[in-house]
Image 1 (cartoon, rainbow, N blue to C red):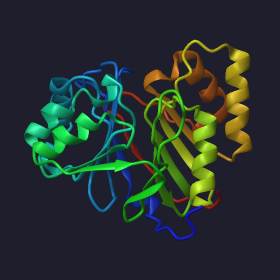
Image 2 (tube, rainbow, N blue to C red; image 1 turned 90 degrees about the horizontal axis):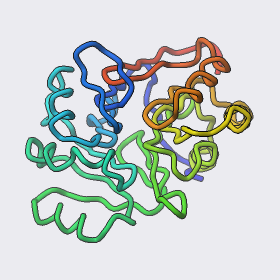
Image 3 (spheres, rainbow, N blue to C red; image 1 turned 60 degrees about the horizontal axis):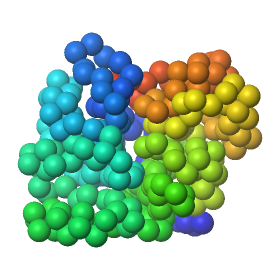
Length: 252
């Protein structure tokens, strides 16, 4: 457990989904993959880069986001639908720090270093910036890291594909930061599961005290429907171009 961690005021956070296969805002191209830009942190953080650099840069431009303003690029795992936009993005921004799981191929970090881009390989839970943390590597088959932002309402948790298991990731985030998980968003990797299995996963969320959810990318339409039914007004519909902001609540 990280006994000391800085919290970011939740009303300062703004998360813009710049890449997702679910449609969201008009004019923003959906495509298989995921990426979102987080503001309100010390530097703007891009979580994953989607699958295609041209689509990523196009969506950034249409959303009024300059590639050069990104300070940290956080990669959840090595699959192409999460790293495919990186090369073209780095042509527009060479000053960002690329944070990636240490299990990425050694040639990946070497190539970044040769190009002059700073790479930070993470194995264990770690601080990325003031108020921003990685779970570190989770899973054994497909290794993945997720992003945690502690707030006064609880932790904002963002997942790429949740290959290690979405309930296990939520439990890990609670254990690492020693606080409740307020909002979980990203790919939950639940496509193809039956309704009984999905009901167990939703029950797991409830038992772990998750207040609000925003499944997207690889979560699956059935999972999104069941989460929406279970969470009601605390369900956030997410697609390419969605913007998520937060307000303080009187209850947690």
